Length: 153
Image (cartoon, rainbow, N blue to C red; front, side, top):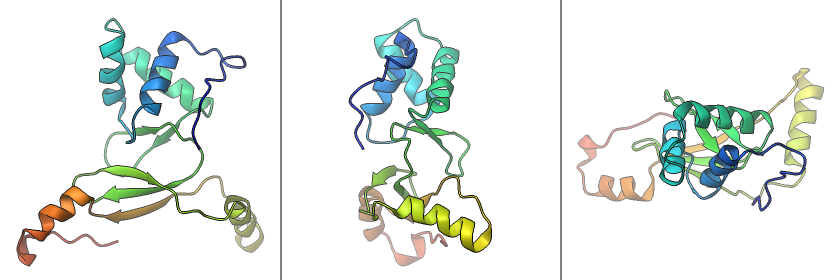
């Protein structure tokens, strides 16, 4: 779901927050705070890491971006805060959004099913496909079967 406006009329979007949001929206992958910092610092050399980190937290708290954790030590940030699916490379860690074309009522039905059948209040969902990206799978084709690592999913 592409975002075209900053909604600055209802939120106080400072120049630093806007720069962070623009940096996230310009990337196809999900950068860490350090990667966002490096990107923003190219355009705003005086910005501190703390300012970027605080902007990421503020944007997350306002629902403009999502903070994601995929088992490594660093949080990653996504400019699409709505629940959606991801492809994750188990070798290099590449992370891509994927559109499955789930029914429009998938999220509502999932929450209702959790509540009705299990008394469970569903707050979010994550659907991740684990495998090898095109670059890593191309490299895997050139290795002997013994040298290719296996990951259980």
